[in-house]
Amino acid sequence: MELPAPASPCVSICALDADDICLGCFRTGNEITDWFIADDVRKREILRNAETRRSESSTIKLL
Image (cartoon, rainbow, N blue to C red; front, side, top):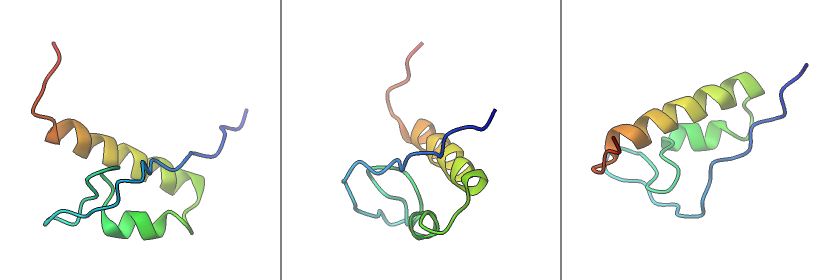
């Protein structure tokens, strides 16, 4: 069974911080531009990386 193509994590808050991380989707600038030519495997990798960054940046931790 084939997985559906990953959806873009863009939330239309497009601003990169000093570390080149988007404040909206937590992708790097390179990951954002790579998204358009990436295969599904690469897109899933980008999504995992962004989710890791999002969880590491959160100041609120749920127990």
